[in-house]
Amino acid sequence: MKASKVAQYGLLTALALVLSYLESLVPPLWVPGVKLGLPNLAIVFALYRLGWKDACVISLVRVVLVALLFGNGAALAYSAAGAALSLTLMGLLKRTGKFSSVGVSVAGGVAHNAGQILVAMAMLGTSRLAWYLPVLWISGTVAGVLIGIVSGILVKRVPEQK
Amino acid sequence: MEWLKTHRNDVILIAVLIALGGALLLWLGLTRQVGGVARVQIDGETVMELPLSQDARVELGEPGRGNLLIIENGTARVERADCPDQVCVRQGAVRYNGESIVCLPHKLIVSIEGGVENGVDGSTG
Image 1 (cartoon, chains in turn cyan, orange):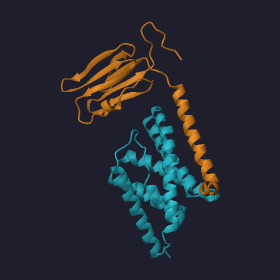
Image 2 (cartoon, helix red, strand yellow; image 1 turned 120 degrees about the vertical axis):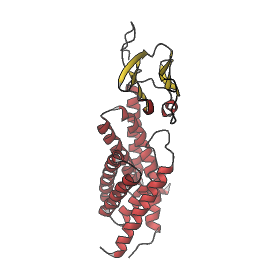
Image 3 (cartoon, chains in turn purple, brown; image 1 turned 180 degrees about the vertical axis):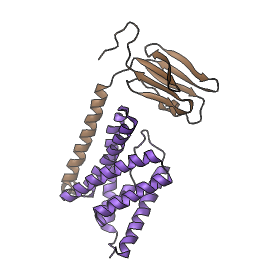
Image 4 (cartoon, chains in turn cyan, brown; image 1 turned 30 degrees about the horizontal axis):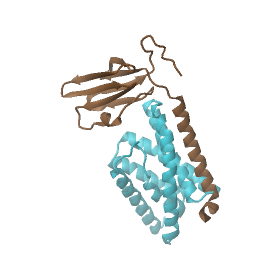
């Protein structure tokens, strides 16, 4: 692996981590889980600039570090499920070549939230959380549009590292 | 508008997702049922079941470590809690089957259940 790539990995992981921390400072809105998904900026950027596998590695490192630093085991399971589903869908959609970063990030946002809720429902053995699903589904769509637009601009504007 | 043309697939995807989310919300909203009783559990044991049709004010727990539960207009809410976080108070009123109010510090769970009310058939649509 080239040194410049290692450096980019490090930078993007650090960025994703800082964005996770920033987001954790924002008080939860009326429904827990409704958030912008700021760390996804770094992940979507990595997906476009470096590639799918690289985005997966950065996302995995972020999820584990966030759980170790601010979270607990249950949070790790939720966010790992969300991140895995999100990256799978984003990778597939990007591969079709039919969508821009906006469509890809929207699918990622929705998949992330749906994955979290499904794992939470399975772990708590309750369907009571079903109410969260449509709410988080829609909030994931909106957040995905914003993240997709911004990361699209970033991919265009940030100079490529050789 | 130029953006909409060049991002046609994105726009379709967003529209489909929002429509699906809305449909899910609508479906859950239409199939939910108003509950019949508020079951009060403290430390895992059911201590009482209060019919939602009857207004009530109930002091739960011990003085200084309790909650004030209000049943009013077919809804249940916790009006006062002697704990710092006040999560259960801020949650507001619940009335639909499966909804619950949880007060972790006092191990209190108020959950809405179907149940048949006194003399009245509770299985209304």
